[in-house]
Length: 214
Image 1 (cartoon, rainbow, N blue to C red):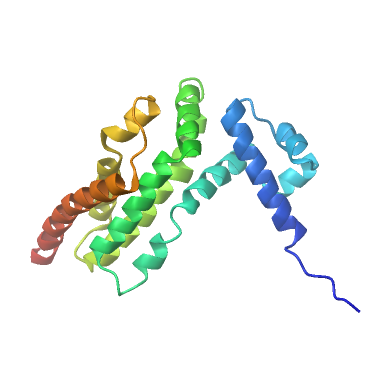
Image 2: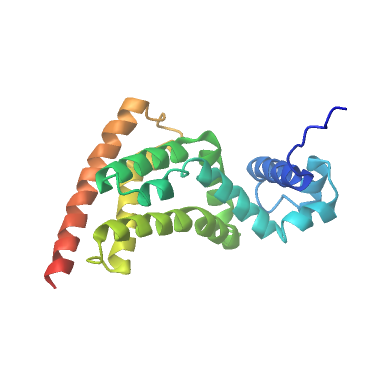
């Protein structure tokens, strides 16, 4: 007698289905015009099922942003937990993933949605910031602090994380949002990231020496 192949739990499948569908709706119609009813209908599930996975539209939106970010940040914590990588190597890896996230067509689209809605709905901008930039900076701050070996305060590590992300974005991201700049190719990403990492390491070394000499 054949044993029926065990698949993934239906709840997991529905979670991913709802999340994917909601992500598409947020991009197509914006946050304000996307309702939980619409997500349920487009997903082919009941509204109750949607709420069983996501307690609110806010939670669903933040999950959509977090999911997109995690696609490009899976190596960050693995690198920070490894003693075989230097800070230079870690920042190069994280930087390359960050640039690719910023250049992702869906990322560009959601940035434009946020900008369009932020004027009349600052709440959606706050949700986006918490799930995207703020969460990414927190992870990066922890990585930098770890390599600081106690010589960097949490505040300095956080500031260095913000500086690193800002240098990576440069004017390129703004120009992409405006539709007047094409994405960087692999070689351009590599060169840009290395320049930014070297600048960041100068700041890191400066603040680390101050902390050690304090």
